[in-house]
Image 1 (cartoon, rainbow, N blue to C red):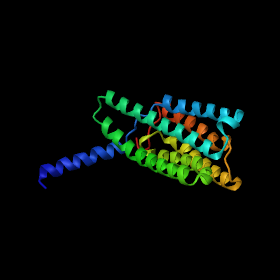
Image 2: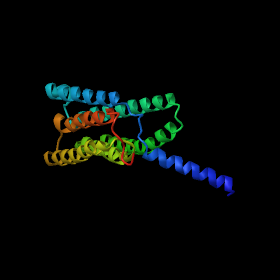
Image 3: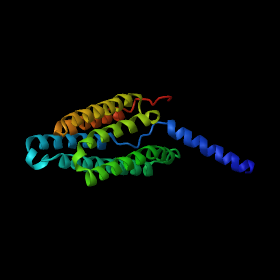
Image 4: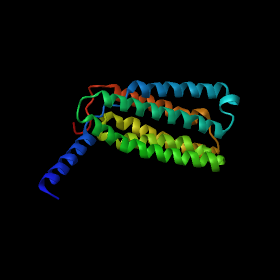
Length: 204
C-alpha cells in the first residue's frame, strides 16, 4: 500500500471515529414521541376492548411488533431525509454509524419475532419484553453519539423489558399494560432526551 493510500485510509478511519463519537441529530424527537403517543392509544384500546384488540397473546404480540416495525421504519426514513438535507460532510458518516447499530438490532428483532409468531405461538409472551430490551440495547450502544441522559431511558427499556419478560413468563400470558406500558414510557423518555438541543454527548 502506498503512502497516499495509507493516508487516505487513516483519514477514513478518523472520519469514522469522529462520526461514532459526534452528536447524531438525525433522529427526530417528534417521530419518536408520536410512536410513544400511538403506543399509549394502542394500550388504551387493548384494555378497553380486549375482545377485539387483545384476544390472545399472539394478537397482542403481533400488534406491538407491527407498531414497532413501522415506528423504526419511520424514524429511519426521517433520519435519512434529514441527512440528505444536511450540507455537513460528517452527516453521512454519522448516519452510517447510527444505522450500523439500528439495522442489526432490527434484523434480530424481526427474525426472532417472525420465528416465534410463526412456529411457536404458545410462547409469544416472550416478544414484547425482548423487543423492549433490544430498544434499550440500541440506546445504550448509541451513548457516544446521543445526549448523556439517554442512559436513563436505555436503562428503563432494559430493566422494564426484563421485568415484563419474567412477569409474562410467570403468568404464562401477556396483558396489554405488561406489553405496552414500558414501550410508551420508553419512547416518550427517549423523545424528551433527544429533543433537548443543549445536551452534549459523552466526550463532547
